[in-house]
Image 1 (cartoon, rainbow over the protein chains, first blue to last red):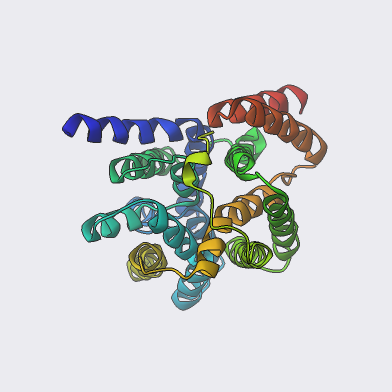
Image 2: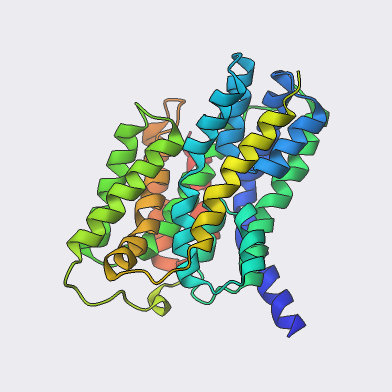
Length: 236
Length: 94
């Protein structure tokens, strides 16, 4: 039993390793911008460990540097991170989790972890935790490295490693495009997110596109047979 | 500057939706089951499309690299291979 748990954990952990190429430079960049905005090394680390949401950490640091109030920063964070509600609802339909496991798994839930777990038809709690910690551990280790090394680290967008994230989500999306409704929902949500991102913060645009796209998909499949079994989903 | 209360507030409003979704493991009506089936499709597409062009005037190269990565993923169904093909094409052509 223990070996099954350990095997699942490390299988999940390994599945995220290709994403480290993007995660590591971004955690370094977060740490450098947090230190630049006047956060202490301890506060920089605490934000990565306790909030653990890259986009909202960047926006909080930017807002702090611009002199925003704490209330503004916390409300922006809420707006950016409400999308995790959708991920949790979706995951809880697929992976059986006990209450204590949900309390733990919730803290480490990210876009990346959701995507990778979803691609695994037989995900267990150990697999989920392996995936989640494979984002959490490098994110926090390289927050530490970045806050000690300080300025002088290259900008990740100049290196082009920011491109890892759209590539990863594209690779997770493609196996899901099994019919015309699926393709239609993907096109609608993508265009909607692109347009909305000009007016809204990234997380809010994503939430809007996610909700409208999923509602459209549910309406378009009314009267269709029930959801196909997850076994059809091939892990990318 | 004492930012600890802000960090704790951010942590609370981030943990709440993360937990709420996982916790509400209720009997989901058919419409919402179909809704949840489309969540990953809608969310992944919304994560991909705005981030594809980038902010450094390399939209053409990035779209071409993404196309190659898409073909590789569609053919071989491997996450790491899609990232490898896409990044290799992007770095060679940029």
